[in-house]
Image 1 (cartoon, rainbow, N blue to C red):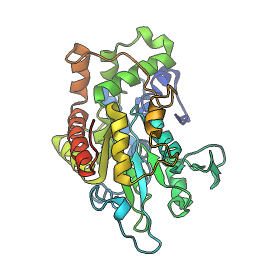
Image 2 (image 1 turned 45 degrees about the vertical axis):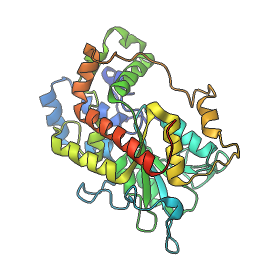
Image 3 (image 1 turned 60 degrees about the horizontal axis):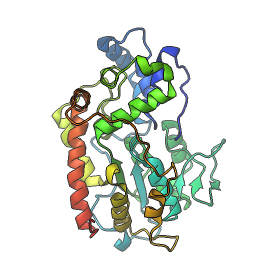
Image 4 (image 1 turned 135 degrees about the vertical axis):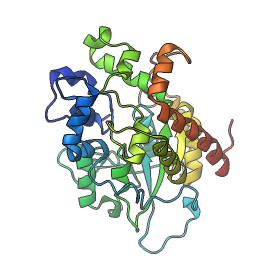
Length: 348
């Protein structure tokens, strides 16, 4: 999983560099780079340099919230396999990746089982060269700078990719155009499990923190990225207060623009995605997805880490901190069930 280094990272905050495993790591470090953990002072600092922090957190090409997402098709507009397009027009898949929600496995399966090509930085310098048996275009879409470069290179018009994957939902969505619209999906994970996974991964990377934080103390810190999904969908910065209106807008965007998968049901998620997009198993086995998910390969296997029992003090602390993302996740479960039936995927 890629991580991009910040220009300046004080030793005090090295421990939090894994908080956002994709895209927004630097944003949280920058927001926490100050001599005090006072929330009031933190907000003052962020408000003093809003353009810098916004670019790090949301990306540099974000359309206005009112216009977002301009060129993403509605989820059930027309199934891709039967959709007539005018000459020169093609739809591409947009995968909004969420930290610790199986994105490495999903992207690898899309390439190995379905032969789908994506933009992903392999080596310097950026180029329009293909790697990994022609499945990776050497352009980064995981950072604001990379997305800007992808737009300048007109990668969507290159004919060399089938999908874009990025955690910067607003910024990456702005890559799509009237000639190359996006059909979007995402894979959600329970927010409590996500927080616990981030916490234990952080401790593995920084052993000296094992006695510094408990899980409950970790989520109470100013640098903890609360309600990340809701904030990304609505363009709301970490120091800005969320309201029920933000949640309503996030739900509307999720239901209108995204086919929703669930990380805890990955095999079922991929069956639904295959049916929705009309992907064909290029291996000819018909069992490629299941074979990879059960292969024992660490790229396709979830790492087992401790999770707080439901209704335990730690669970309740996280659930309260993540109250907007909790509601968004449960709403996503409803979409997962309804969308699965609409594309005719029979649950086992």
